Length: 453
Picture 1 (spheres, rainbow, N blue to C red):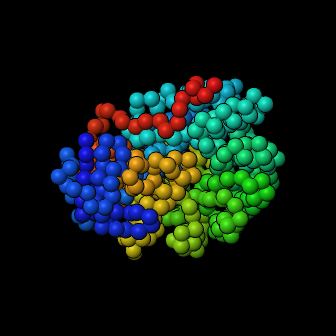
Picture 2 (cartoon, rainbow, N blue to C red):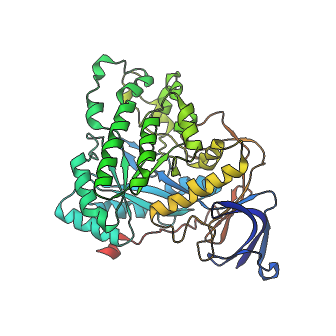
Picture 3 (cartoon, rainbow, N blue to C red):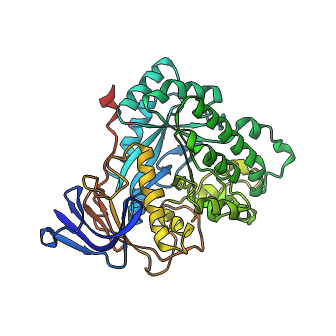
């Protein structure tokens, strides 16, 4: 089937251009002025932006974190994602206690098989590092699993990696093409906080237990290691102004990138002071003094805007004893609101906002995930993942998730309308609704681990 998208403003090579896009099969066939007679279907995109499909680079779905199971399945997460133009979901496989990483990967694939409306890519979180484990990681890197996530905190959860361990992995796996994603909060600084002196019944206390200094110090240390070993490194969910500035200052010295999340731009620690503030507990915590941080991001400092979508059921968020905030599951939804809240960064300049989406929610995530040869840009030969976005649709509330979880951005309004979404050339969304809700069409962007052993 051939589809022609006409009269839209197309994001291409960092510019908006009045061009037509011809899609043939699963690929983009031409960009420019293709002959309309050659198309089976024509979409009139007048008044709209034509953007590459969006990628949420950082999500958690259909998994157990501590004693709690996440609210979103692969089906529900990718459903709300695709309805909002997210054609690729990047999510995590974490090696659990007593299992191999390959077993964890097989478990995740089984949950997603036949149920994902968008394409899926997995980041891997290994937690054991024997010689056999490292051999497995080498095979996975060679076979298309490019991104490994490490944490500088969470000892009790069994996912902590010391700076020595991180350096060892940089040395052994960095030269093989490993792209390291690092959660930066210095565990020693967090452990040094005397929790007995704090009021643990107040959600705002979370900001004292996980201070800004912990994030800043961890960023400084892992940047030093990455530069020393010429390793590709991406810092996830940066929330601090000083941490972001440090990454910007060192970006030219190596392959460093970072993301921030909408909650760190448009929510602040006053949400934790609310009577229901526990609903906004996440790590790193929401911070104060957001204006200079938002201004830095407006200047293009962050490489990627991602959500850290981690929705827990409302009953689990509200089920704590109101005595110890550490019993509240940490995380909030964001997937469905990603393009809408990202747009707010540059909402006074719609063209800049459209280009911001094409760069920070398409191109850069595709490159960092290792799929920049097929995703993230509207060029001939690329996957025909495409969003027709109308900036002047009817106003409506944000909807971050369709799962039974609390909305992260209550009271926030968007006028962005997702008119059409193509997933590898297939017309999957029209006027914001799935065209084939009972026939998920997503594929896995990496091979089954069984084929690599």
